[in-house]
Length: 25
Image 1 (cartoon, rainbow, N blue to C red):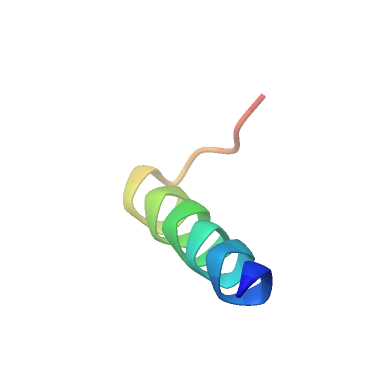
Image 2: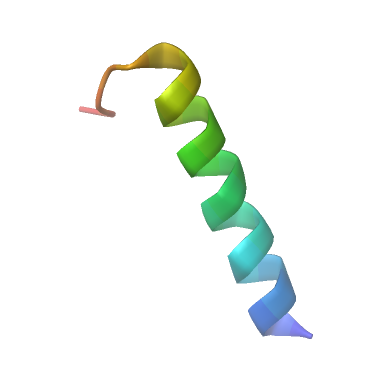
């Protein structure tokens, strides 16, 4: 469903943020 797609996208963004340690600006 759409919720799963959104959750996956959020997890991907969180993982990228934790890896880079820099905010998206």
